[in-house]
Image (tube, rainbow, N blue to C red; front, top):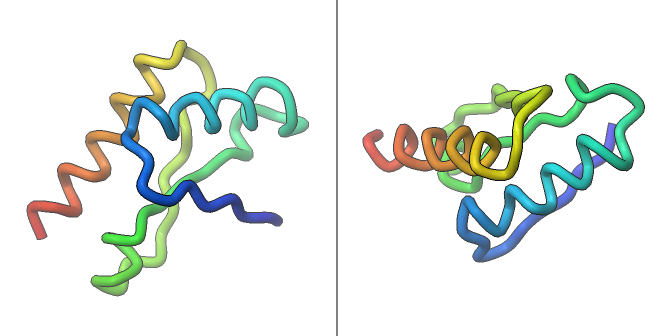
Length: 73
């Protein structure tokens, strides 16, 4: 298991990194997960999975949904 931190990245920017990890680096697409500083700050330690298929818009939407959910806490 490894971690990559994208500091001060918008969901659309982080999606580029996530897609590269999923498509070019991970041995299987279901292995790429994410969380956020917001989630960790409120004590949530579960990770969400990057969509196993889909384009940058799909990944960015998943990341943004997570951010929106954490902002609502």
